[in-house]
Amino acid sequence: MSAILQTIGGMGLFLFGMGIMTSGLKKLAGNRLQKWLARSTRNPVMGACTGATVTALIQSSSATTVAAIGFVAAGLMSFTSSLGIIFGANIGTTVTGWMVALLGFKLKLGEAALPLIFIAALCYLVKRVRPLRGFGKALAGFCLIFLGIGYLQAGLEGYQGAIDLGNWNTSSWSGRIALVFVGIVLTLVTQSSSATVATALTALNASLIDLPQAAAVIIGADIGTTATAALATIGGTTASRRTGFAHVIYNIMTGVGAFFLLPFYLLLVERCWPGLSGQSPEVVAVSFHTTFNVVGVVVALPFTRPFGWLIERLFRERTPPLLAAFEKGLLHDSHAAVAGLVRGCRLIGYETVSRVDSVLRGQPPPGPAGIADILAAVSGARQFAMGIEGGEDEEHLDSELVFECIHMLDHAERMAERLEERERIATLLTEPELKESGEGFAGLLCGLASVLEADERIADSRDALSEVARELESGASSYRQGLIRKAVARDMSGEELNDLLDARRWLRRVSHHAARIAFHLERMDGERCSIQEKN
Image 1: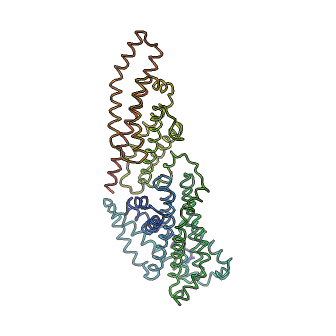
Image 2: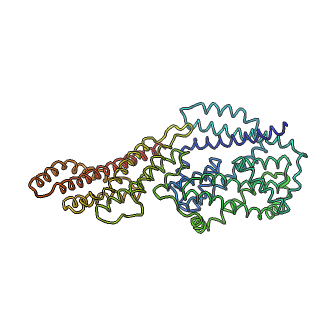
Image 3: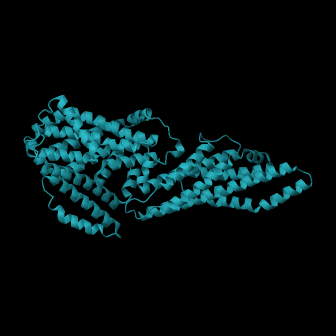
């Protein structure tokens, strides 16, 4: 009974420690790692290096993969770039195994972890210094990991002689497959491939299983860890499904390759380093984990584009483009969620402004998005914005940026609704004076749309649009009086008078909304720059 409790408790401490350490490391780094993750992906090779580095730093391949899924869904990263990150994350996650093999068994850090936990608690209590608080949390998680390994090791040692795994002989195909399946199931249960690897290494250290059996379980852990990525795609966009299932398919392919590589690897180790398997089997097992992941990345990188093409054919686009940026999976991270919200708002602004521009020129709409699509996107954006919350111990939620986005969405919605007033638009396009004003206004809208499409900062657009809005507002009274005089002089009918007044009122209101959109976009740009300087 004592062995069972120690094993279960050790596993719990390890899982809890991994979660706390990952959270602490993410807090310590702030959103710098995520920005690096989003920007350092110019090609698959750079993406693989970035994915491996970020995963090694935050000690969670699942966190890296889920972040990549969110960035792709929000349009902050291309799908092809995310593939490199997914490939590299598998290499980065092997660092945990090296920590367990070299520190957990060689240095026996369990007892040393107790005073370190006290130091970690003192650091965590300093609430005003966020980096120190993050360091304390990461250190506490690190200590819990090795306390867990100590209990796990003691518990598994109690099973020596009580469990016979001889029937699962890795020299046979069936035995090897069964052990891979054990690794998959254990990872699905714990939702942590690192926990499965640590358990396999601890069982190997306790002589409960042999080296080939431990290696087979580790292969299963690499396959089982894809469950988190698959779950992250539920209810998500097509982009998120592509990224998540690319991770699943890639890891299965790597696992199959490792499955056939295992006997040759063990033979190579025995010939090149005789006795190493007996002296340090944990190191050999972790080396195998790193080796087959590195080989998998090296083999996969030249085929990144064909692989991406295959995934895109398997998962065709179903989510409306205007809603793609509002991926619910981003809501767990306020910084990533706000970045997605900003991008989505700019895209909505572009579609709305472009459509008004084309209408004023008497041209067909520039894209497939209709008025109903724009209004649905505005509604989706609002719901997404309301779902953004500060995470645990989050010091700063970019609330000002969110508010600017909501204000901008409000004016984009009103502008889109004006596009449904077809009679007023028709009058505006037939009356010479109004048509001339509309075409001049359309030129400014075209410039604003170009800036939004290129994702550039709003420069002179706001001032020019504001000036047009002021001119239309100040000239409303004189224009109305002139039309009334014509109506009184019987130069036009009362119906024509109402139509012209309504058409100019339409132009005046649309110009106001366009000016306010540009104003809030400029404020959004300023907030983004301010946040970047702080970080």
